[in-house]
Image (tube, rainbow, N blue to C red):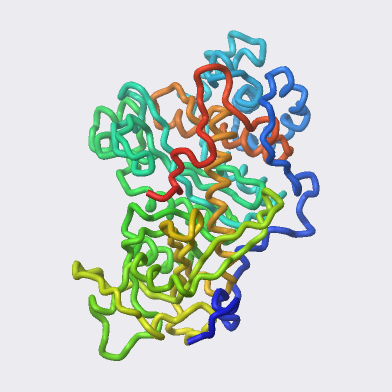
Length: 470
C-alpha cells in the first residue's frame, strides 16, 4: 500500500502518453483570443452591441462558414440571421431578427431560410468546428444536456417528461450539445435532438415535422457517441477527452462502448455504480467482491487529499478534497447487497503502479461542497494524467453550463418558433455560429448578464444545472 501523501493522488508515470487532457496553452494560438475576461458586466443595449460587433469581421466569418451553401442569397440570409441573433433585443423572433436589417420584408425570407430551406446544417457545423480548432486548442469535448421548456405539443420533440436535475415534470424538448471547451472558452459545435417514442413511432407526427427516416428513438448517450465518431472520423477534429454525465444511464454499457472505440473519457457516474478490484484476487469475482462508488467513498475518506488546479477561466486556483483509486467494472452487475468491509490492498490507490494488462479505470471521488457532503464520482480511462488535471477537465462542465445559459440562451438557443426537425437544427446551428463569433472576438462580457427585455429570466450559474448533485 502506498504511504499517505501527495503521491497518492497521481496516476502511474509509466503509462504511455496518448495526449494531455490538461494541455490548454500553446504558443501557436491566435493571441487575439487567448485571454478573455469573464467577469459579469451590465447588459449592453442593442445600439451598444452594434458598436462592439465589427461588421467586417462578422462578414468575413460568415463568408467562410456559409461557403458550402450553393446559392448566394442563402449565404446572405445566413449572415443576416447570425447578425440578428447578435444584435436584436429580447426574444430572437423572426420579426426581431429581421428588424436589425431594417428590411421588414426579409422576415418571410428568413423564415423560409431556416424552416423550409434544404441547406445542410452538418457541413456548416463541420466548418464551424474547424474554425474553432484552427484558432484555439481544445481541452475537451463536453457533452451537455439541454432542456427547452415549451408550451403546447406541436413543436418537434416536445413531450411532458420528468427532468431529473430539475426534479419535476416539464413540457419540453430535450437535446444534447457537443461543446468545444478550454478554460475561458466554450462553444457548441454539434447538436442532437432527443426524440421520444411518441414522436419517432408516430408516422403522422414524423411526416408533419419532416423527421428523416434514419432518425430513431435512442438514449442521449448513444447520440453523443455517434456525434463524437462523426467529429473525429468525418470532420477530422483532434482526439480530446469526452466529458459527460452518465448518472441516469447504464454506466457500464457506456464506458464499455467508449473503451471499444478507443475514445478517451471522463464520465460522471452515480453513487450506485459498482466496481471491482483493479488487481483481481484469484478465485474471487462475485457480488462479495463488488463495491458501489458510495461504499468506496466511505472507505476512502481517510485517504482524501486536497487537490488543486489552476482555473484558467477565473485566473485563480481551485481546490477540492478528493480520493482516487484504480478500479474495473464488474463483468456483470448483480442484485446482491454490496458489502462495506475494507477492500484492503486489492483496490490500488493512485500512485501505485498496476500491470498494464490490469490497468483499466481510475475512480475519483470529489468532495466539492463540504467535507461531510456527498461526493461526485468521476471515472476515466486516462491513466497517464495527474488527478488535478482530470478534475480540472471534468469541472469544465460548469463553464459549459454557464455559457449555455448566459450566452447561447441570450442569443436565441431557446427561441426557435418553428415546428420542423430541420428548422430546429438550422436554428441551433446559426445560434452556435453566433456563439462562436462571440468566443473568437472576445465579446463574452458584452453578452453575459441577465436576459433582456422583461420577463425572461436566466438562471444563475448552478440553478437547475444538470451537473448538480441529485
